Amino acid sequence: MTDTALEAVLRRDRAVVAAALVVIAVLAWAYVLWLAADMGMPATPAQAGGDMAGMNMSDPSTMDMSGMDMPGMDMGEAVAPAFRAWAATDFGFIFAMWAVMMVGMMTPSVAPMLLLYAGVGHKAAASGRTIASTGWFFSGYLLVWIGFSLAATGAQWLLARLALLDPMMATNSGILGGVILIAAGLYQWTPMKGVCLSQCQAPIAFLTRHGGFRTAPLGALRLGIAHGAYCLGCCWALMALLFVGGVMNVLWIAAIAILILLEKTVPTGRALPRISGAMMVAIGVWLLAGAG
Image (cartoon, rainbow, N blue to C red; front, side, top):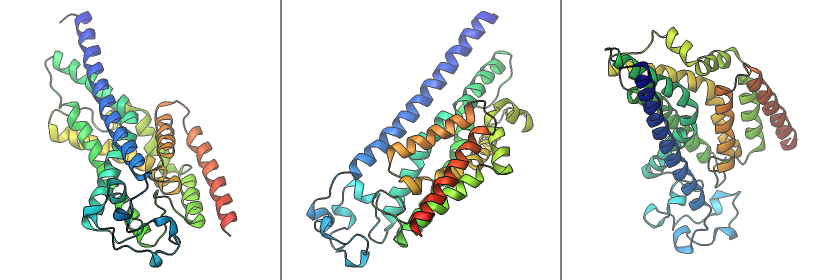
């Protein structure tokens, strides 16, 4: 195969991978938008056990939950069981919501790594060598975030049980919100953040450090898990901010996703995380002062 023909094939393969990533991200965001829109719709008396506007929302014990079983509920109520005990189906809906949201938020930021993988994979195939499919690597990466989604679902269950969430899944406690912001802001300055971010910012350096591409699918899956672990170490504190602005606040979700994308792709070194971290700490202190 001539160099010109190889370059054309590589461009085509990267375009196919890029298009697939766009479709995945768009579908994930469409699901999140659908859920957010559904949650914004008022429940009917038959669905919600009466008009919730007349209830004291700060006192869950005064609320009538008799009409809120799953069979009569719409999707919005199913994914926001803030004022009643969770059933197994609630946990499943919340877990699915978190998993899809993580796919939508993290796919754009891992795209450079996947495009590099796809390009090198085709070059290797053209020279008679074979490496495992990009899909195996991406699957390993997503497994890490699915695991995080399970932990986030558990955290949401605990906060809901303690009556610390409002219907949009944001904390109703200024103290808790301030603590989360301060903790996330301080983490932005830690060496752990720097190490993890450096692995996400430089795909080639990550591959070199971890022995390069893999020929076996299981090896590629493990490599994707390793990259996902660094990504999780870089971004978990930022994801915790979803409980401050609202897990179903689409603008807040987009803002966090954009910050993550900028941190990984814009060559600012540690400047952007530290600036954003300082702002988080300042806002967190302000919230604590207002709650005191």
